[in-house]
Image (cartoon, rainbow, N blue to C red; front, side, top):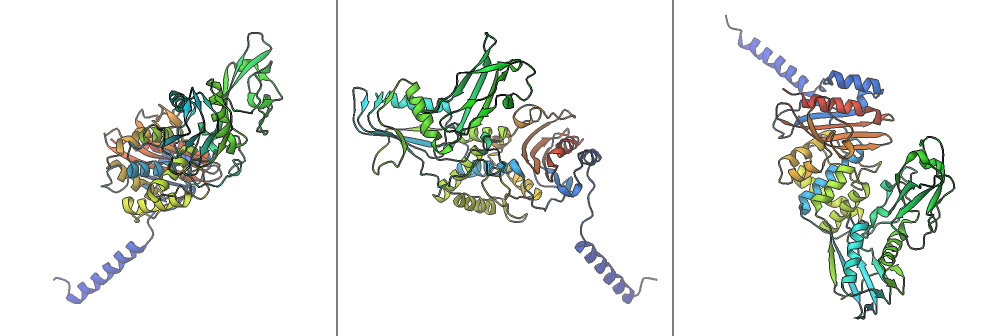
Length: 476
């Protein structure tokens, strides 16, 4: 006989209670791939210190792997993915920065009877070669002597001066350079050491030549292994007027280069412009100084940067912090007419809500480079953005900007054991490490992979990240 109506009703109630309990219960912990678990154990990084997600790039299926994906974490330089995709989406890959140059006065017989003004607008790639081209265009106007001053206008960005050593005590590392509306050569000096044939000294060259800074042309050679050759040089870089060495250079090192941040970042642009103008055989009767372009003055020409697609490639391939911060501030300047961190953060928050949505929670934006203790994002939110990017018109530019695993950029030395292919952004701080991007599976499908560790031994988790990428690629 069929069950009585009362019994059926009781069963229905019990099933409803069971389904309700299952829906409200916390999800069971999803096991990580065995090779990933083993790598984390070897690194002594606990499972609860990592977040991992593998999902199809199209975003139409449930993730293959989801571990602690809703937890906001410090992504380190992985945050550059958000800044660069937002810029490609808002500004377009062909966007360029303009640096107007103004001539205030008549030019007669090669002499400018007045001032030359260079107005920075945030160009992230005004390196030495491009500064030379800019000044060569000035000479192309018939100017070989400036009777007045060269005036640098840095007012487009409103950023307070900071101590380069404040973040991690490494003030001489170029990665700590601060953004600047007129950022020249990342405020860094590149030294090249080449042992001379006399066996007694090494030739030392400094690029760029900084006006008013004394530098040695040679340094004594020493015997022994190369080892920690920077320490052997006993560098003295703290005095803005002098860069020198109290030690020696090991002959066994051969030729080496060393890039350092200049001791007085505020005066770097003035010294670099003055030094290059002199090296080009031109003359300046006044001085190089900061100031504002007079109102109503029309530019003599506008110096254009490379396109954003090229800049984004430099940022992501080599994880360039100051270029990322230049781009972050540019978003504020272009969208909010405010070259400030507050304006940039407001721009990114609005863009995220409009483009990515709020379902996975909004990231915490600080300076857009990941060189921050404050920035936060969840693996689920980052993966959703990568899925949105995959379906967008900017996908080719974003993917090609990422380091190709085992090929170039920050992943040149980290090849996949499976022989697959991946384009991934890396990130690394003292207590944060991560990797995120796209993996080409053996089946032909594309996967979004996100893996981030926040732990005192976070950087030891890199083999576990690589194992996850390998696992994602083995999908057939």
